[in-house]
Amino acid sequence: MSSKTNSWLIYVIIHVLFIGVWGAVIEIPEKNGFPATLGYVVWALTMVPAALAALKIKGWKLDFNKRAMIWGGAAGLLGAGGQLVLFFVLRIAPAYLVFPLLSLTPVVTILLAVFLLHEKTGKLGWIGVGIALVSIFMLSYQPVGGAQVSGYTWMLLTAIPLLAWGAQGYIMRFANEIMSAESLYFYMMATSVMLIPFALYLTDFSQPIEWSFKGPYLSAIIQSLNAFGALCLVYAFRYGKAIIIAPITTALSPVLTVALSLALYQTIPHPVIIAGIAFAIVSAILMGFEEVKS
Image (spheres, rainbow, N blue to C red):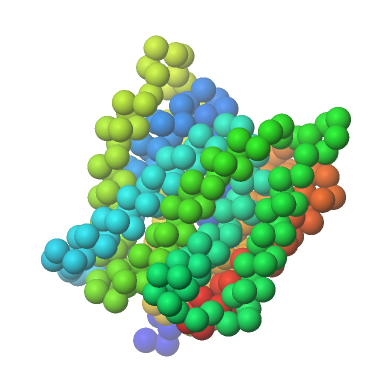
């Protein structure tokens, strides 16, 4: 029992490494000529073995009732919809800008809980929200005469998964009370797979598509990092303390993504943008602590 209890740190390390690396390299297959819509299809399919592995560990016990299916399906649709849009966002903006902004999803979760559930949040939560707003303005800064990303379309598109994943976190408050984490993950996988026909419908098969290793096979390897990284987080929370795990995973994954992305792009953003990235990560840490307190 003690070995399982102490294994939370291993799960956290795997999660941070997998999600951090995934965020930095997720756009590579598309840059190779593998469409974003097909990237979504591959991502959804990689969730299947992860979900089955989780159920096997659980003894194939699936919470199969109306409430579990509704809440699990709602969380899955929000997560999958945000994921589908994310592939398009990374067409026009680098990961080192997108993922710090996405780390602010607790802002949405906290605000929804405050205004819809009339929950109270502490000083850390409101400070985190304030810092998040400052970071958004910094990340939107356009250097004169040499902006790395022109325009604000990328921010508008990033707002879609930001809002969707924030609402998903809000819904998970209910879902985790009526079903096991493995069942929740299974329903999230199921709804993601259900959207595959829509992703295929959006795919322009008349354009050249990279079908070699650099396309679907590389995408499968990269998307597996996300699928099994998320599964590791489930077990990290099972064996560890949320007050430690939530801030670590919320902050370290985007830090790793930013560092690797900057190395891949071989660029140094404007100091204002660097400050915005730092502010976003600090905000995520504060809200991570506030979330586990509530």
